[in-house]
Image 1 (cartoon, helix red, strand yellow):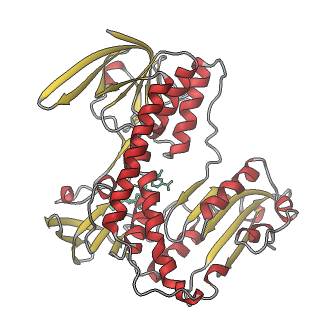
Image 2: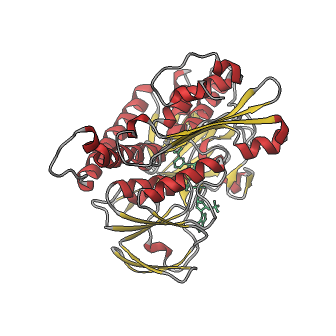
Length: 453
Ligand code: NDP
C-alpha cells in the first residue's frame, strides 16, 4: 500500500495550496481528485465566470460608445466564441495546476476517495467500464473536497441548470430564468443580460443579496432593472416541465414562463457524499465538517479546509486555510486564519465589493448613536457624456469617538479592485481622519472615499 505523510482529498484551490506547501516542507503528499484538477474556482466558478463577466461587459461600452464619438456598423458579442475561448483558458489552467503539482513533488491520484479506516483511503475510478481501486495510507488526512450547487426540491428540478452547467454550454438560449438572489444568481443574470439574453430573475426574498448592506443591494436592484433584467421579488419557482431548450417554469405567483433554460443559483452545500466520514467518527454539523481554528476536526490527524467547512466559502480563504495548516504542521510555523475581516465582491453589472460590517450589522453591534455613516452617490465621469443613469455608491461605516472605520462598501466600476486596497487600511485599524488625511487622486471614483463629509 502506498503510504504518505499527508493525503489531501480534493484538488481545488485549498487542497492544491495545502499539498504544495506541505511538499515544500518535505512531506510526502498524495492528492486525490476524482474530477478535474483546479476545483470549483478554476474549472466551474470564479475563473470562467470572471472571463464571461469581461466578455459580457463589452455591451456596456457598446451602449455609450457613440457618445464618445465611436462609430461602427454593428457590434455584437458572439457567446459561442466567448464560451469556447473560456473553455480553452480553463483547459490551460487545469494543465498548469497538474504541472505545478508535479513540480512540487505531489503525487496526483486520480479517482474518488473514501475513508476505509481513520488512516486509509480507498480511491476508485472508472476507466471505460473497468473500475480501478487503490488503497493508500496517510499519517494525516486533509479533507478539502469543496461544495456542490443545490437544486430546490420542486417537480422537474433536474431539468434546470446549476452553475456548473453554464460553462459547459456551446451556445446560450434566447431566454433564461435565473432562480435566486445571491452571488451566483446576480452575477450570471448580469452576464446573460450583457450577452443579449432575455433574463427573468426570481428571488424568493424581498431584496437581492441578503446579508449585504441594504443600500447597496437596493442600488444594484435598480441598476439591474434599468439594464433590462426582469426581477420578480417574493417569487418562487414551483415546478419545471418540458425539455431542454423548451421549458415551462411555473411560479407561486401563478405565472408560467416559457424559456430556453432555468438556472438554479439557490446556494451550495459541502460535498460530503460518499466520503464515509461518519465511519471514522469525524463530527459534522448538518453537512459541514466541524473544525477548530487550526482546521483540525475532532479526530486528531484529520483536518478540513475550505467550502467543506462551510465557514467563508471563498477561494482566498480556502487557500489561506490550506497554507496555514501546512505551515503549522510541516513548517514549524504555527498559524491560523483570521476570518474576521474578509473582503468579498459580487461581479454583477455594476460590481459590488465590501469589507467589514454593513450599516445594519454596525448599528446592531455598537448601537445607533455610536455609528456614523458617510456616503457618496454620483454618476461616474465615465458615464457623464452618455444618457445612462448609471450611478455608483460609496459608503463608509465609522464607529466610536476614535472614528474607526469598520465597514467600507461600494457599488460601481472597479469596486472589487478599490475595496481590495481599502481592506489593507481597514485591517490596520484606519480611522476616518486617516482617510481624510490621504490626498485624493483626481479624477477617480475612489477619491470620494477620502473626501467624504
Ligand atoms: P447564496 O447563498 O449567495 O444565495 C442563494 C440564493 O438562493 C439566495 O438568494 C437564497 O434566498 C436563494 N434560495 C435558496 N434556496 C432557495 C429555494 N429553495 N428557492 C428559491 N430560492 C432559494 O448562494 P450562491 O449559490 O449564490 O453562492 C454560494 C456561495 O459561493 C456564496 O455564498 C459565496 O460564498 C460563493 N460565491 C462567491 C462569489 C464571489 O466571491 N464573487 C461568486 C459566487 C459564489 P435567501 O436569501 O432567501 O436564503
